Structures are given as C-alpha cells and as structure tokens.
Image (cartoon, rainbow, N blue to C red):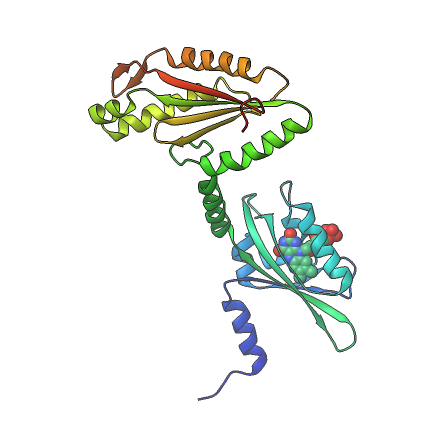
Amino acid sequence: MRNLPDLLMRDAALAAATNGIVIVDATQPDLPIVYVNQGFERLAGYRADEVLGRNCRFLQGADTDPLAIVEMRTAVAEGRGAKVVLRNYRKDGSPFWNEVVLSPVTDGERIVNYIGVQLDVTERRQAEEQVRFLAYHDPLTGLANRARVEERLADAIRDAGRVGHQVALLYLHLDHFKDINDRFGHGAGDELLRQVTERLTGIVRPRDLLARQGGDEFLIALCDVPADAAAVAAEVAERVTETLRPAFLIAGEALELSASVGVSAYPDDAA
Ligand SMILES: Cc1cc2nc3c(=O)[nH]c(=O)nc-3n(C[C@H](O)[C@H](O)[C@H](O)COP(=O)(O)O)c2cc1C
C-alpha cells in the first residue's frame, strides 16, 4: 500500500475538517485571505472565490462584541495567538456564535501567515444561556426566582441606603390556590399562575422586582423608594388586590381569586 504524498494528505485533512480553517497572508496589508477550506464554506455560507483577498472582518455585524474584535486586533499586532467567541453573520445574514482560534505562522524569522480555526458554538451558547436563565428564573412564569431575589435585594437595599432611600417588600400568597389545583388539575393551576404573573407585571415599574418565591407565593420589591416605604407598599398592595379582582378564565371557567399580602420596608423593619 502506498501513502499519499505529505502535501496531498494534508490537503485532504484540511478539506475533511468540520471546523472552518482560514489562512491569511500576514505579509500583505490588511491580512487578505489566501485559503479557506470547505468547512469554512459550510460554516459561513460563502464560496472560497467570494472571500479570497478579503479580510475576515466581513463576517462581523451590528451585534459583534467590539472587545472581541480588539482582542483579535491586539493579538495580531503583538504577533501572538488568540481565542475569542464572537457574533458573526453568514452570507444569508443569519447570525451564529463563532469560536475563533488565531495562530501565527513564522518562516523562522517573521510571521508570514495567520491561521484561523472557526467553530460554530451557537448551540453551546444557547445551552449556557438557558442554564444561566434557569439558575435565576422560574421556568413556569419566567419571573425571577428566590436565588435572584436574594442577590437583587441585597443590591437594592445597599443602593437605596447609599442615597437615604428605602426598599418596600410585598409578600403575596394566593388564597385557596391548592383547591384550584385539586379541582382543575395542575395544568389549570399553572395557567392561573401565568395569568397572575401577567397582571402583576402590569402594576410594577421596570426597576422593581417581581419574583415567584415558589408555589403560590410571589414577591414584589419596590426598589429605591424616596420615603415612606411602608405607605407606598400599602398603596401597591391595594393595586395588587384590584388587579387580581376580575375573574380569571381558566379551563373555560371564570375563577375568582384573592391574595393575602404582607408588607415590610427597609430600613424601617430591618433587624
Ligand atoms: C486568520 C484569521 C482569521 C480570522 N477569522 C475571523 C472570523 O472568523 N471572524 C471574525 O469576526 N474575525 C476574524 N478575524 C479577525 C479580523 O480579520 C480582524 O483581525 C479583526 O476584525 C480585528 O481587526 P480590525 O479591527 O482591523 O477589524 C480573523 C483574523 C485572522 C488573522
């Protein structure tokens, strides 16, 4: 059996790679592309003849992180390698997360080429974002969860304290929620929680915190109240009662719901 000559074998390996591989000429101004493999053509949707002679920045767009671009620019200026993950765009305009590894190639004296290896890490990114979201949110309602409340509250109390402001807390508990679950099933209970969330969202300001503490318990933190947090909380508690007053349409039935609301204020009630 005969082996292919080295160069042919390396060509075949480059063509077979699933990563994008780009080689640029580092002796020319603006690093023109001199080679892309099929992996790059598949990844970016451009044919080789459309990109030869161009700088790779044509893959960037409005949402590309400028810091990642600076990191690549600095690495090239310093003649070192780099690894970045950044938003790039295919020829058809669709975005993807591109993990780019840059490596300089020298002829023994100076850098003559740079090799870029690209990997579409969109799915990995989305999974990471999902994990991050779930760590701090309740999947049913999309509201902040207990862990997020602990973090945000500590920040809000500190920020308010700095300027002599207060934070008011409302603890909501839906009355007889268990009966609804028992009578109509958990699907209906879930739907009710979503509808309650929608109504509560309508009465808080964007800078306030609305959270689901678990089960049928919600929390509203009114951040940055200039004064009289207890009175402001009482007003909002009134609004909560009002917004929950109209019947909810669940499983074809109009259900009445009420909530018990407890209030406290920082620093007034702080231990
Ligand atoms: C070999 C090589 C491959 C590159 N691949 C990409 C890439 O896939 N996506 C990208 O956005 N930038 C890529 N770049 C970075 C850009 O070509 C450019 O270096 C970067 O935008 C910083 O320079 P600028 O500020 O002049 O645009 C690559 C650079 C080199 C040297």
